Length: 368
Image (cartoon, rainbow, N blue to C red; front, side, top):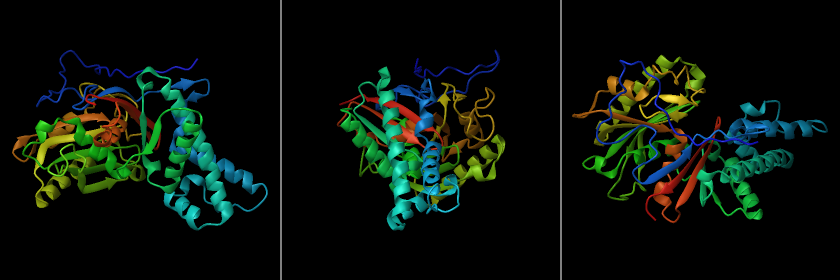
């Protein structure tokens, strides 16, 4: 029988004499279900059926596997127009270029993989919609690395058509923000509006299985009070998967990135709020530790002895004249939150992020 679970983050296990890091400024717990503008109905769901985890069918790896299958079929009768390079090593930009300028067989191969992957994505969506937390979902935003390509846009569009043809009443749309920026912009929605009064920006961190991104979210509140006009300044990306650091080296590099962001924001005259907002894979415990789901990060981030928000506060003790506060949530959650200003016409909505794996979260707006 298919199984699923609704995540209820649990406190990590600690010794009797060890106290969890304190929370200040009334921000509540890390990984909170109640956020300033939405109720988080679920996230980080692992759904399994007789074939395994359904998320494995809608990941970047799954698309490459399908592309390999179509290429193998073509190679049985003719030369592969995509060349000898393995599918996993062909970039999204190269695939897009082949779609636009390559020969018809090359385009046909890519379209064949798109069609099969879109069917799998539609099937995954149907499975999520059976869950109680997703049952009333009106719109699903698709984010993650696949969004940053024409191939990804075609996958999303084709999956949307498949669902409509099956009378599944849900909209499937690509996330608006650039994939490098969505997780950073969404981080700003973890804090209430009152915290930003007197400030022009907030530091944000997006940690993924391949990259770590940092930047200052310039709030632009006068142009859009709901953060609809927020932009990213002082952006930096580190492809840690290429260097394979251990956990301590990764944290050291992250701290250096934050320090550079603070310096660049000051030079750009962006007054930062004393807050570091962080999106990270996995199930986030209320004390800021990570229970499960961080297996693609460098080292053991799910250790009960590792607490990233506490480390950031220790290493970056102040921003401007104020003591630093750090708040951590799931990376799919914060990507979804980047769409919050544009969800006023629906009550229940969700996000799927297609990258190394499949991230997921579902929301209910408090107003509207």
